[in-house]
Length: 387
Length: 136
Image (cartoon, each protein chain N blue to C red):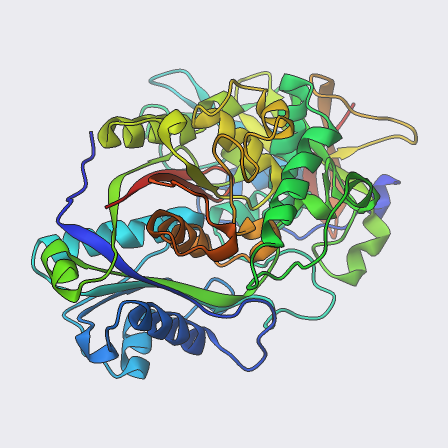
């Protein structure tokens, strides 16, 4: 069972504005997020001796950790750039930071994600252009599949076939997530969504409509970790990572297993076993919601409900504010912003330390964060706890 | 859509896949089969992904399969030049020999695919290259 040291904790979180931020490149966005995360816990850039970041997908760049370190004016003892996929990238950053701090390679590390996915793309373009050798050039492009949207549509169609799921099941995820986003001032989407809005949104790749799809965003998010001792001395409220586990079953849609064989349930089992609690004992869930289908499958894989029941679970209000375990109170990738899932982690920290403002879930002590990169290719589950 | 109107981004071949695409040009769907574990696999590579053996052989597939999932693509991910392709249908197909492959369906007017439908390979020529699409 993969264990996580409880001697390293999260002390600071930061997010930038999200949406369209012309003129900002990934360097400025990542620096901005780090500055905010440091300010959040009363540290300065000179305190930072570890930096872990993402190489931006839309503008791939070599040596991106030293690029951002140089811009910040720091000389870290530990640097790394991570790309595992989706929110699992952010989880893996935290895992590496914990290892690096625990083993004495650094004392204060920032994990940061940020890129200008929205403003960098050409006018009229659809989807997000990501390079992936096996997924792209040879086995997908010749058959008219490019990017991640159609692959997720294939998963969604399969889900509908297996469980007789309906438009209403998918719509509920979009509508609840939008309602949550309206409680978040830093969200791209500001308007209420109804079932009629959902049904009227145009089909993109059946059965996925426009409102089944996440946003494309400029922005950044960062998390600062240090030792528990240091956190105590700093006198700031901190949050502990209880466990993290991942599974990779494939990469491209070409090698997609059936839904019951995705790695998410196994990762969840490992993460919950290591944490000593399960989904029913968490008060907030931050689920990677690149598409509505992702949330339905994840609720089932994590054990919130039985396979095929996620639509009903959502309609019963269990994932809404005031329900059993609210999902994505910040508005998620669907309605806040898609910052690679880093804002799922910053939101978990907000909720557990009671700084989520008007979207605060009272009594939130334990959180689960799930992620997947590719098409459920790499799945990860992380649990966190208030201290 | 008539078969001669198809657009496609042609594959970038690797050392592994030359026999596969040469097979397509001869209207033959070739799959690698492992001599040690007797399993077929797709896509082409230098080892058997089931057992790691490097002892494998190319065999001609029946080209028959069943639809595992499908999607009707309604917007172009390849820019405005592809607008005349819309909508088109892509599918994950479980081949009779075992492997799952991604391809595109060639549908007659009014044909509506379902998961589980039987499909057969059909080679469609695009810019001088034959691509393994499927028909109901």
